[in-house]
Each structure stands twice: as C-alpha cells, then as structure tokens.
Amino acid sequence: MAASPPGAVSPAQTEIAGFGRRLGALLIDWALCTLVASLLVDDLRANPWPQLGVFVLVHAFFVGLFGQTPGMWVARIRCVSTVDGGAIGLPRAILRAILLALVIPAVISDGDGRGLHDRAARSIMIRRT
Image (cartoon, helix red, strand yellow):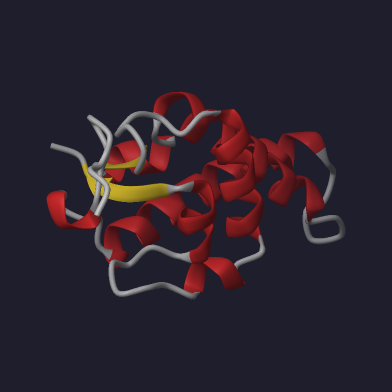
C-alpha cells in the first residue's frame, strides 16, 4: 500500500462536514447569487439561467482560490483537496461547480459523504475549526 503524500487529507483523518451544514451553505450561496443575478436581468422567472451562471462562477472562484464560499464561511465548513489539504484550484473548482449545478452528481454520495462532484474534483468538505 502506497503512503499518502505529506498534507494529504483522508475522510478518516478529518471531521467531515455534515449534510445540514452543507445544505445551509448552499442555500446562503444560492440566495446571494440570486441577488446578484437579479441585478443583471429584468425578471429571473422569465430567464433563470443567469442565476445558475453566477452560482457556478462564484462557487468556482471562491472554492478554487480560498477553499470556501461565503455560505461555507458562515456554516464553518471548507472544501479542501484530498491531495494536499489546501484549496483545490480553479480548474478542479470549475469541474466541481458544474457537476454541483447538475444536482445529480451531488446527491450520489459514498459512505464518507462525498458526492460524485467531490470525487471528480478530488476534494472533501470538512468542518472548519
């Protein structure tokens, strides 16, 4: 069995963020993105796509560079790389955000609570101390 690289994060070594915290962070982020998108279009009911676009861009930016969105900050959780424990970077964050926007990959999870979007991005949601 190969040794993990220094700084690697595994589900067994960390306190995984619970579903309630993750959902709360998602709702906060969605509300903020809805507010921003409402400034871009006249009626979100007639054209909801800017809302989803803003969500993907904001999520990818904040998770990729800082490891957490404003909603995650409020919920005291972080999205970190399983490789080194740091932020996952923009390319992996964009992949994660797009899969999260598709919803289905996010609801298919493993025993560690990691959805397919987390597995594809090699990330894990942990509680922030």
